[in-house]
Image (tube, rainbow, N blue to C red; front, top):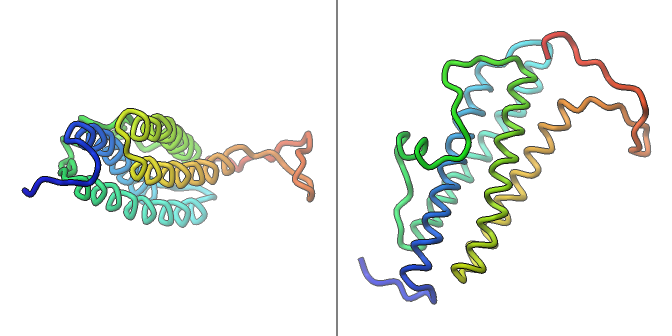
Length: 179
C-alpha cells in the first residue's frame, strides 16, 4: 500500500483506527440487537416498537458502513467478523434472551448510552491525543445520532404526562400490561 501523506503519522492513524474499530464493533452489535428485538417484540406496543426499531436499525446500518469507510480512509482495515466484533465491543450480547418489550427498550437505552460515553471519550482522544480533527467531527456526529436514538427510546419508557406547554404534571401514565 502506498504510504499515506495526510498530516497524521502512522502512530496517530493507528490510534484513531483502533478507536474506530471499537466504535464499529459496538455499532454492529447494537445493530444486531436492534434487529433481533424488531423481530421478537410482542404486546400492545408491537407496531410502534417494530417501526421504531426498523428506523433505528436502518440508521445503524448506514452508521456501520460509514465507520468502516472512515477506517479505510485512514489506511486501516475494519473489523469484519462476529468474533472480532464481540471481542472489541463494550456492549454485551444477550444471546438466547427474549425480554419483555419494556426490557428491550431499557436494554437498548443502556447500550446507546454506553456508546455515547465511549464516543464522547473517543472525540477527545481523536483530537487531543491523535490530532485528527476530521475523525473527531465524524465521531461527534455519530454521538449526536446515538443521543437522539436514546432519547426516543427513553421517551417511550419514561411515561410522565405533560401539559401542552411541555411542563410535567404530577400524574404518571400507566403502561399497558406487558409493556
